[in-house]
Image 1 (cartoon, rainbow, N blue to C red):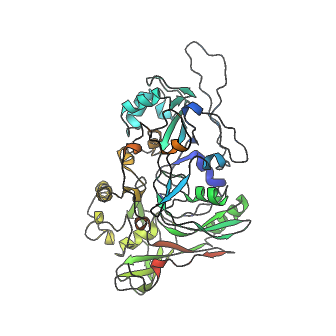
Image 2 (cartoon, helix red, strand yellow; image 1 turned 90 degrees about the horizontal axis):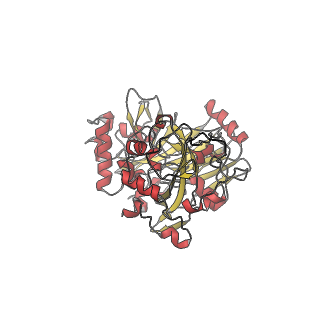
Image 3 (cartoon, rainbow, N blue to C red; image 1 turned 180 degrees about the vertical axis):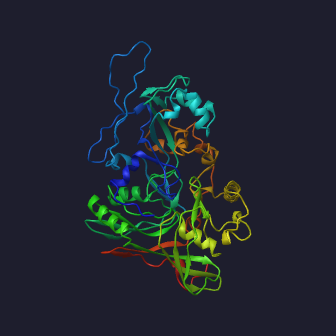
Length: 475
């Protein structure tokens, strides 16, 4: 999928996507997000061109009737605001065992009261829509001062929500590790930045990822900010990724997209001996789950087309050139699975959960619910849920349309303390602080699918062929 003509970062600081970074731009829940210094050091920040995000609504004083609670009106979101220095300074990276890791940090999630919450108590909302935690957790969070309603500490969860109520929750965030492979800049001028994205890195903040994303790493380590996302790559896909530096450039390339002047070329390594002749797959693709990120071939899906050409065969696996003519989610991976040649190390489409044929010909023999359960259980048994970009707490949360809800049910800072030691301290209410996880190996975070070339009417950018795509490569 190509997305262009957007303001800087598409206002990502103000968006919680329904699903993870590599699930597509199909649905979006607008929220207001701001980095939280913790309950004891909360402050309002005014937006400015340098990148400070929009402040929470100021508590304007006016005469109130007896017992009436003042509810500030929502502010119009400034979609041009980008990430600033204060966002990058929330935490820091460290490298261990071939992985890039993020030290846990405190963060504010902010949202206005949704229409369906009006007239309901906070306790009822937490109990029905934020079930990742027991109600005892929310009571403890309120006592700790991490829950605020219209910038006032919540003391009583029985308080009834009103239209435009503003809710803030300070959370303790843990991000999944990604590969330590650096982001290489392939080209840069006054119009564009082109990078070679490593596998396992989401392009932009989404789901559980924020600092371990291409956007944040480019901003923090290369000083590249306010970039316009022109297209995207799945989190597990590596290769050529292009950003525009100005809205004008973004608009120009967007015009090329509409006129079908852009061409993308991928290379992958698949199971078995792929046919020598050119193969065209036009099977429609349907999204099974945005949350886990699973698609399959289905007559009710969206039409798409991919051209495949074998480049080499080493006796057990083939290197295949892929030319997607459309941009559906996981299109190349799903079409290869359908053809009976899934990507060798695909953590979704080359799993036993798809049945003995592993989805070849669309033959699965399971309902969508049974398939998702089998996939999750297979990764859980291998202690590799992180490879899917999800954790146990994500699976325990209620499956609702507003996947962003799970963010408000995370946990936060009890005393607001920071400093060098504070980065390593465990939060007493944090589920992840109490969970011991096996780190994925760098090998687990690499999938053999690489965007090799991105070509437009007046530009062409290429990366080098990955090591695993060499003709004589053997595992």
